[in-house]
Image (tube, rainbow over all chains, first blue to last red; front, side, top):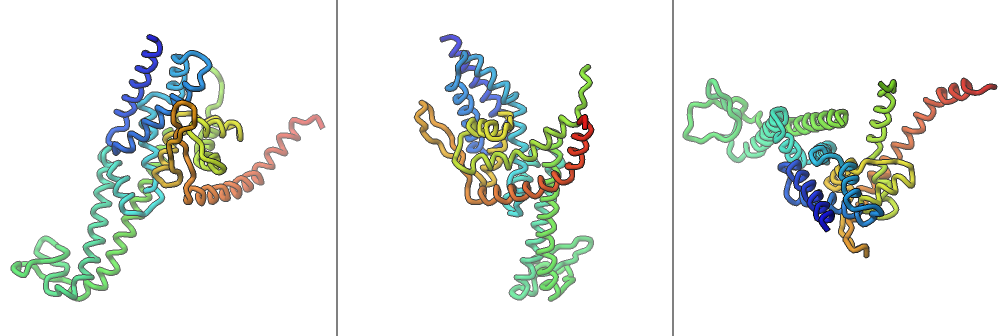
Length: 199
Length: 126
């Protein structure tokens, strides 16, 4: 009986360390992963022909340390979807996860946010110019530039593009969105490839 | 002290790693399987030994990518099992990867045939 309790404790301890290693992953996904691994160990135990303690030790050894297993889960997640998908939500999610791991990830996340913001701002300006022609544009208020809506009370700024903001916004906006997406996809793929090499 | 070249072993590991996703998707082609059954299917069908700690992170990624879904089923074993099933896009992806693999392996066969032939001649007494 004592051995069975020890075995259970060993499994729980392994799963607890794995849970810690999974870090800031969404709780639902963590639960999914933990249930996968628990189920795997249970499956091995159900098949056991030798003692339970040996099987658990063997299975845990085959799975690797909880920390390295957690790292494999993290690494594979980074390769998921965003590395092939251009969906903004997938890219935002993947780069946000990357940002949590260090400065480089944070910079990529920032590039994505800025790129998307510029793209959306140009498109919004092009779209809204006909309705708020007096307030929308690319403004110069030395030494600063600003793109977008300016309050009628603010007289210090000079509008630079006039109606040209419409064709420029419709062409530059999508370019920003496309090139930001491609750049971030490339960076994510590169990171995945480096991770694979490190395996 | 073992004078074993690490090159080919490492290459072999990288090659297997690269093919693992396709192997896992292919193992689920005929029927849904649970984790341990996938490992066994890979061994029994192709002699491919996959580390247990390698399988689950890949399955998790395939699940995030929407290529597989998982579902708990009571298999009558006293505990439920989580079965993985290919989704529609998983099937499409498996087909696409299998076709790419077919083309690639045919090209490689062609390329390495000279090495194989040469090796055989070299070893033969004839």
